[in-house]
Amino acid sequence: LDNFLKIRRKYAQMYNNAFKDIEELIIPYQLPYTNSSWHIYVLQLRLEKLKVGRREIYEALLKENIGVNVHYIPVYYHPYYKKLGYKKGLCPNAEHLYERIITLPLFPKMTEEDVHDVITAVKKVINYYKK
Image 1 (tube, one colour):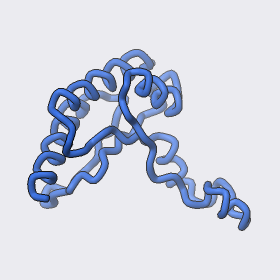
Image 2 (cartoon, helix red, strand yellow):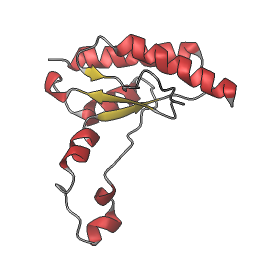
Image 3 (cartoon, rainbow, N blue to C red):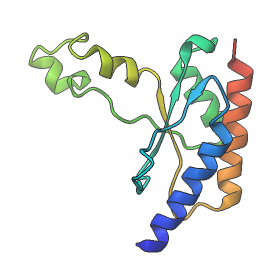
């Protein structure tokens, strides 16, 4: 477990260093006196600085062979809750964030080369779609 955490933290730091100065992205924030286990690595897209939405960024990264994902869908977007009458607009902050986040690969079996491939692909895609 300690080794898994060490690797995850190393790779998260590599992502942070690579993306911190890209104005179209917001990297995850961690308080200085904390030490995340980096279960996942979620980037926030500044859509106002991009020509496209999250869907196009997501699809472009898939085409670059990057296994991106989307987490934190508002629970009331799921069919069960829709049937109960929950509608879009209930939690505007959660919806705003959901439309802008994308999860990058981060797991202990990755290699540093894998991390560099992700970084290269993200920079390529963001550069292509920036305004």
